[in-house]
Image (cartoon, rainbow, N blue to C red; front, side, top):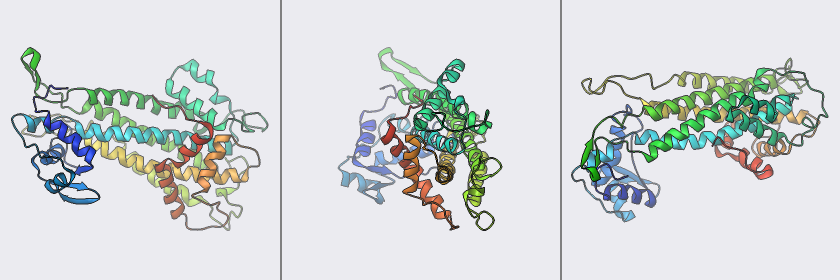
Length: 402
């Protein structure tokens, strides 16, 4: 916005590097999130002097060579350019924005997986009525319930052709409230990140039209690290909900007539029993990573920087939480598709599309086979959002958190 006191060539060079496909090499660990992301941003700023390394056209090489090949001139540094290039929570913000984008798409697939499991478990449809959630008023729950209804629309379960319980377990009927809470946090997080993207996170700040220099701590990463940490914990929470539905699909005492561990040969075959083990290990790691980073401040710089956000820790662990979440959700999708194979009613159009997408990656489990390949394939499928694309291709776009 023109308040950092550097030459226009500095941001314009970064734009040119981005557009040319030159990616400076930056270590992911080294930032405490205030005074901004100084260490990693300094690595990025080496490119302004033609130093360091970069990736270009799939090859790692000296930055000077990459910039020469890409036709991007090296601007060098003059007064104030260096500090302006490294101050602020830029790495946390950039990584956080990418994570929010990916998590939003994961949430939609979590709703699709929930819908599949709810149908496979012959859920009572009353807890997903619009008025129920509108009366409480949380936007995320309203959105989640609407998406569940969209995916299950046209199902024999929805039209009342099947006998259901009067009341289901919380892991089923509380799905809109739980996923909705994450959706509401996502909306808040996006607001905070958009403020940071459009704000001035430098120090000092130069207001040329008033001939003023303002100093403070706008580089402090807490305004974005706190919501990102909380979103990461929310992803863990929704993953736990997914695993609890998985448990109900596998447990013959809870699955409303499905075979134990989703195999006709229970006792002879293990079915998907060990799939739950994998999901459980992933979730325990998520829980460990869900301890907040923003309370982990360690003083540095001779106690001048005696409170820092540790926002980059939060971003990195949220990335790992999401990676695990792809795996957890993939396992629920496999199990839900297997369960639906045993049901003889007509599911909703969205549910059918999701099951078809799963079956393109993982075959029905008739007899035991090593399942790690299925888990890995489905995890990649969720990360690519193949299930989401298939469902939205059939029923139209699902509602978002914003």
